[in-house]
Image (cartoon, rainbow, N blue to C red; front, side, top):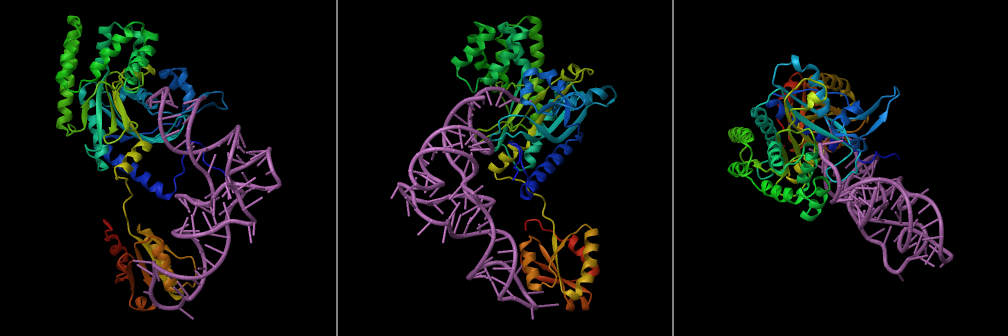
Length: 442
RNA sequence: GUGGCUGUAGCUCAGUUGGUUAGAGCAUCGGAUUGUGGUUCCGAGGGUCGCCGGUUCAAGUCCGGUUAGCCACCCCA
């Protein structure tokens, strides 16, 4: 027997239903915040990803040369495609643009917990708005998504940081522009590596500064309130000009935190400069969502990336957005006992005698056309008992019994298979009766 | 790319110091059951014990390799 490729998953019906329910909640939650759906190609030019991240990223892509000699790759993330699409229409679109996508992505990595080679992501982005109103709504929408699954501030939280703060810090340390990526990378590793190992690694890039950077970065990463950030900024000893810019940034922090509080996100968001995100293209506020009661991979991550569209050759377009993966999210929901399920709808099993078959099949067609879910046994000549047994084992909620007694007066028996109770219903009223059945909680 | 653990029926697992034809529960299918289901009982199908090689009179069991899965590292878009 063939098996699925490493890191690729089969979805049998029981898993498929959960997955569809997940997508449905995603869709409803982000549409409630005014986002509209879009999609792009699963296959893109390899250069679209190299452009942003460099040649080494190729190792983690599914990529090949197509028959036309083009170097192509399965998309590992949505943002470059979004940037390309939005960039092409940027000048003609009314701002802000609020788009979301639910789609498959591919990365050639070693599979492990929370990580596969093909996963589905929800991407939610706001384009064309430079102000913190967009950052606030982006984070609020993320909270809406979590809450739509019944998760609370007991289950998850969002760590909010700001790359601009780190820019000020690097100004103060005197880190040159070409080294800043390494420093951000080091900050990202602070939670996982001890001082000695990290300083040693960092000193390969910034020399003797490494120790100072590490100790200062530790202090900034430990700040978790706005007053603390402001005090930290005053201690930097910036020039008057830079000081003014920093003050303006702190004012934006204040507006953002106020908006998040008013949008009901106050209990979910914590200031945490230790988050920087791995990607090069982030420019401002960045954030990641985590489970609260256990250590796990980030549930979602995002931030502001004002330069990406321009870098891809489009016009300057402000942007802020985030992504959430299906694997980690379903993991989290299972841990929290909040695994989503598709809505329960009545499902009917037709039970009939040989001489009632014709009438019954007529109703099968009519009820199915009316949108009811209707099935029946393929076995001819099976007794009513056999058919009912099949009905109860098939997972149907109700059996419709077509017997001579019922049909003689133009009725059928609608039997609730859970309770065993039956009720006679006029055949012409069947669709209406079944449509009114409410299975919630059953 | 590195390391640890694990592979026996569709699933969960037994399988003694190596010893005849590898078992159980659940699930599946059939029957008991000719107009009223879920229970119960009976029966059936389903395994080259992940794969290859070695040791041995004899390997599911011991050894080596390999492959797959899980977990961790690396990386994380």
